[in-house]
Length: 397
Image 1: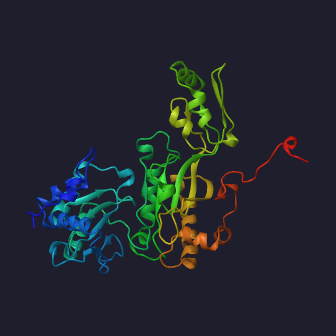
Image 2: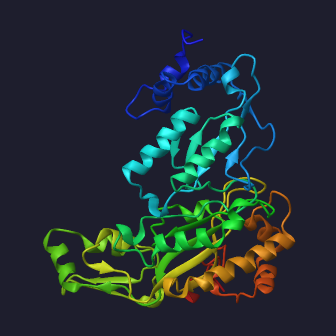
């Protein structure tokens, strides 16, 4: 089988960007399953159909998630792919690893699996691609000895993930690393034992730049923000102008709520705090001159997801501002999660994400049952004034 050519896969190695095909070929030198994977993929491209199927639930002792069963529907042609399971590893907050820790994972996986890995999956886990049913328990045991745990899969809490936060970013409005670590440890039962209508993802982003893509890709997005006004260093603004930076065009004219004003004569920048929606655009363009306010916290959004039952949803604001304080053990956020899960568990249908349940039953019912007040920030659509007005002098009478 090794001598068989893979012209269609070879084509994917052309061009400027790294190719997953190259990495599979590297693994195929040491591993028969990876070698067969190349030829199975080539066959799929030739026939224009996939050859993978679900063939039952597999896992490790005491856990209801963390392993995704994968099987080929051509076991006679590809015997090493008869079982090719995926193992998810719960990644550390902010994806900070030591090299020796990564080496330990790689050594275990080369010994017990295909050697193919993905850092990181959409949920935030480290993904180990391809092993047999017999190897699952030994893999789990050896990973546990090195301090790693399985991530979530199935109808449970998926592994929470976060941006690098205060570890490397001075604009984080709360400690995303601590929040992610704390919530992961608090809800271990929800993470490892499926109990809900479907999966539930939590992502923590330290500011509205949303480096974890939480608003689009998580059921619960925790987005750092501030409640007071932007902090503007006027001397730094003048320094930008002196360097030829066009504050009016690049920053003010692109402000989505038009809350900024630049005085070209005095070279001073001002903001109407009540109109600012904390989008981070001005901070991104003038980071030396503009900073987030002092009263920091997070906006909580619910319902983001990809297409499943309904089309793709963006997150829906349910709490405009919440203090995310490690000193209080994030208790306010934890209590909110418990209330949301209880409502969803009672009202959700099988394989229905929380956003789809709210869409089906209505936000008003959700807010009433969970005990949240309705506020203007919850308006999902329209996001702009739908009414058209004309000056009185233009109206024909």
